[in-house]
Length: 407
Image 1: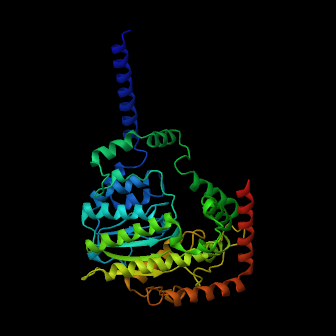
Image 2: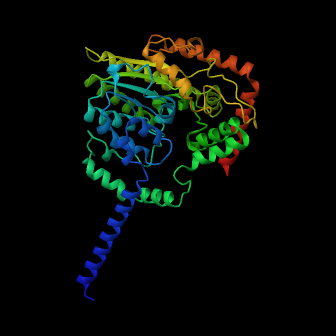
Image 3: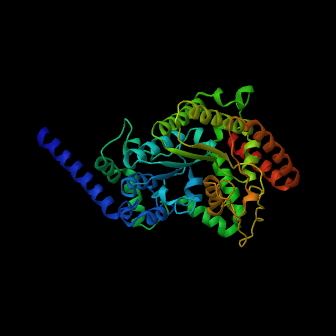
């Protein structure tokens, strides 16, 4: 066989294989991309049932054409309902573009994507410190988003997804009816069935902090200063760039620090993150203040802090093995429930929710941030005095994490 004929046969085989993979993925549709045609309600439901959530949401923006978007991590993804009554008729359509494990830079690119395609007028943004600490989604692809230097035509971005190895794996998994598309959800469901909600809380806390083991237990005087680390400085620069983009395009921003359970904040304290968490909030306030003062007229930029040790955050955790008891406000200590998400949306919309006294107003700005942080410190002391058992449990779990981290 001549060399030219050999090269031709290899190229033809490669093309046939590529066509077969693309056809298989397109026909099985493992990410539910064709379900986008079924409308926003179906899209949101698929978000927690199947992999490929980034692609599904990114490609759905030109179909939904949202005027209001929700941005944030998995907390906002699972806790905030785009159909909530806090959104006025003028806000519609509303789309939840929050994604698990996204960085703040990813949120900026998603805002640009949505505004480029549909002219967004308002964004509700759940802010979490972990989104400013690196990491991120392995499937996040700026090329699939409009309005940035890496943007590609929609058809090419869609073709890349259909031809990807990840999509092929999801297709095979779906054919075999396996749990590979959502192993964590299946594992947590099994833990919940055996040990109840406290078991799920323990598993998720260990998993969340073990995944950031290298960043825990910081040392030195600079450990609690946000700007002391170049990666943290870069993340805050992305937040400022997000604010600048919103200001330049007259996009209203209603932002809030997510309401995690008090146990989660105790983890912050025991792994050495509490001073950093407080300084992160100072940086947020300063960035918002600078953006608001840079030029008039200004769109509305508002910031709330719903983290803390308020009555909702201190909700009692069911005992281990109690399979019937369920917390009202939290799925586990890191993720708030849609019931609490409803209170948050009412708060930031200016409505007075039914449980208003249990969720503080939370507005923070340059004038009140130090008083606010001092009040949180006092609330933390009261929580530790009244919930010594939970505090001791967190301390034991952090000690366990230290031990397995040394192995």
